Amino acid sequence: MALMEKIMQDMKEAMKSKEKERLSTIRMLVSEIKKRQIDSGKEFDDNDILGVIKSMVKSREDSVKAYRDGGREDLAEKEEREVEVLKSYLPKQLSEEEIANIVEEAIKESGAQTVRDMGKVMKIVMGKYGSQVDGKTVNKIVKEKLG
Image (cartoon, rainbow, N blue to C red; front, side):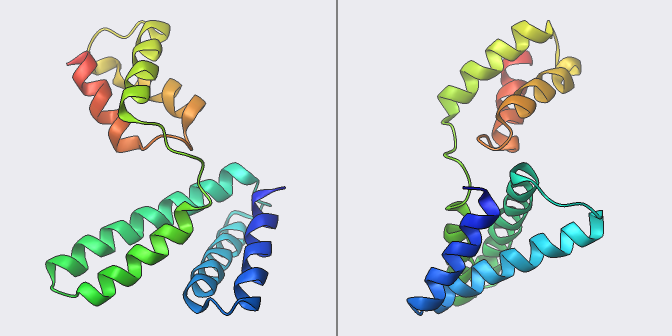
């Protein structure tokens, strides 16, 4: 099943089971996907939708930190629940150990020697495993390996 079909199916289920918070988050996701489709002028495939979800997750995680810093635990918890719903559509994330092995392979493949070659390695890793890895984690591991 295509990702958008799954999202729409989950929205219907959330309506039927009266899960207000989940329904609200899914509606927000659908709205954001449609907005970005209109802005780009093209129909989104699963990879495009995963990109939208990832950016929404990152945005919410940043908000959680800001709310906690501002002493607004209630808002931070709401954002965390939204993150959980959004993450349910992302593929299983690889562990740091798995990412480290992938980075080592990419370094060999690209012939990278120094941190200046980091872009080559990042391009290979993100191209092959983009939806399964966190860019910050990959960046950190590449710096450790090449630094």
